[in-house]
Amino acid sequence: MSTPSPRQARRPAAPRHPFLDHPGPLAFAHRGGAADGLENTVTAFRRAVDLGYRYLETDVHATADGVLVACHDATLDRVTDATGAVASLPWRQVRRARVAGREPLPRFEELLEEFPRARFNVDVKAPAAVEPLVAAIGRTGAWDRVCVGSFSQGRVARARALAGDRLATSLGTRGVAALRLLSYGGRALSSLGVRTAVCVQVPEYHAGVRVVDATFLRAAHRRGLQVHVWTVNDPARMAALLDLGVDGIITDDIDALRTLLVERGAWPPADWSTGPTPPPRRPIGAPDLQPPRRPKAVDRPRAPTPPHAA
Image (cartoon, rainbow, N blue to C red; front, top):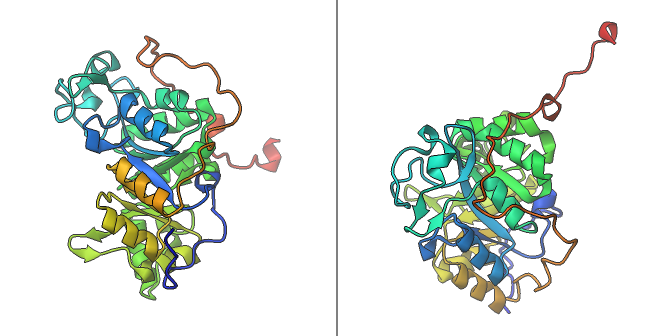
């Protein structure tokens, strides 16, 4: 077992949100384990879960009729046998697309139902996906199982405005820049999300500049933020980052990360998935589908009723 380095940044005493409640470093299967070429499919996520992964990373877009789909790209062209922008196509067309010519793109809500004890780190890829995502989390009661992030600070802020503190969120790009500034002893505005996020998810380097170092980790941990690094596929870099004190690794190579954590005695226990029997679920791809409704007014923060209107 590897001995923690004395130079490790001190970790947050307790996670800010139940999503992060987990022993040891968090291991995220990026798009279910994109190294296998079946990214964001039930097959990929099933393999990760069968290996013992508790945390699954995915991306979401909304179709033209408001169905939330697990898909990284704005178009179907790269990973499926179909073409066209997801946002311009109805679900009845998107559902016929096959990743690598074999696997359908799942709805995000189907993933929550198919893997009821997994936790999902969700990158919201487009503004139109924010409200369907919050609605899906609310319908399934998955508030403790989902963390929402985005390169767009506005999308993260919109999700929080709809859901409130029950929703875990990571910092957007401006929030990351603010945290980097704070790590150098500068000042930043709280409105950039540093005080409301539960974690920060960043690459080790960006444009040739190192993002994740001991100074950055200390700044994050002092503010109760976990630090998760993406997308790390080299076992040597995984080990170096864990020794530095990061709280999670996001990888395409789910076998390599699992092997490393097992060697370090940091893989979660085999019985992590025990718990109540999950509710019945619809089969993946079953015809369902009414487009998700917009979140009800009760899901939105309400202003207090003025005394004269009571």
